[in-house]
Length: 282
Length: 327
Image (cartoon, each protein chain N blue to C red):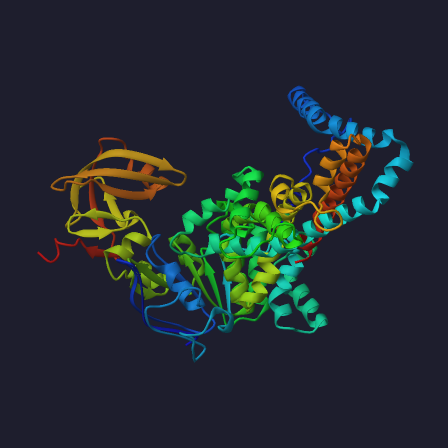
């Protein structure tokens, strides 16, 4: 019997060799260099600049901006709405992806294309689209402009594709025989879904949710038309930043921006941790 | 009888995958479903497991009519060609799966898993993930997982099909030994006649949705029911009005054997211990293939262009060539 040990094929690509931990070949050195320069110019430097701008006014200024009741309300509204939207998307997005992959029905191909429309539309157009159905001239007589429900709906609209599009390919790749194996071992459909399918999907759901969440806390275009921008009520962080800028308060804008950045990073890290844990536990 | 299949058929549109299959598989035996790809043998296995529905007829497992039962209720262990292991679970968790959903006590599950991993020689890998195992190890894991729920029958669908030749051979021997140890009624699908002949107690030859023959490996090899079975179980050549195996032809370098056909050696290929001759026989269009041992060929001093006289060995398995015999 050959019990030859197969080397663990984990995600780690940087294999440690004798004589140094990370020894790069010339090509991979160039590649790494390009990637880092690109990343720095596009992401790291601007981010650092924003943090710098926020720190410019000193910590007290930074803190007083965030402690300001109106700013705080805007931030809280943004994060709470984004979390709600993310939770809904994680469930509905998974269901939509499931239907698109597993079920056969007329119009499936069309639906598959339509899913991307909220993503492809300029967000201001998304706002207009929603406004024409749910605005003051709504044919249904429902006006959601200047309400939190309106913000919720707009965020749902623009973040719809994220979970669907990340879960879909993973579902397609799932082997049918794994589910059949579970069934022949006595597992019900529900048990199979919970213990076999879901753990495989969780990383994709988490990835899609992170993207959706990031999009939700940063959404601007569609909310300009929908939210109404009433302080304490329907003012979201991105619009608050605009307001700061219009009032020539650079440091205030940067402070809100930095806080949004921190929230985004924390959320993405948490979702990643959750997905790792669930994927391992089964 | 452990498995009774009566009048089972399956169509996919116009394609008839199975046509009125009747077969009884006795308890405790190792049976091979042998046939070419697309012949319906996997479909039959999946119908027995409940993974595929039948268009008609019935399937009985251990005396219980299982035709309408879902796979969960059939108490059948199934092993897939591509292992179908649960990738996110450790080896031990994979084996424990069936027992855990049956809500067996923790201690019992643990003991059973340890026992099975011992049986399939994977004890030291209990806490690995399947991705850290080789193909052969994964298939043994899949077997242990299927055996954990103590199935009344064990079904294996081309279990060694995805493995390389050497591992295949090892696992084949191992499956035979395992079966002698565990004695669970086992059915496995294969398109490899050597695998079937070597491992199985009984072979069911399936082709184009029909059963061609059922019998022990010896019966099938020595008394093939028809041309197809004969051809599928090993090399076949034609000598005059007969179809027979190339090693069942006697070669003489002088005339005299009554009923022998004269010919000329066209080609001689030496492969290991055997010599394969291609002989052009007078009065026959297609050349005759003959296999003889290297020592024998040397003793006869055969070379290209040698004149030879061929006759069937006494006691050779031979069937009349279709069309010639009935004419």
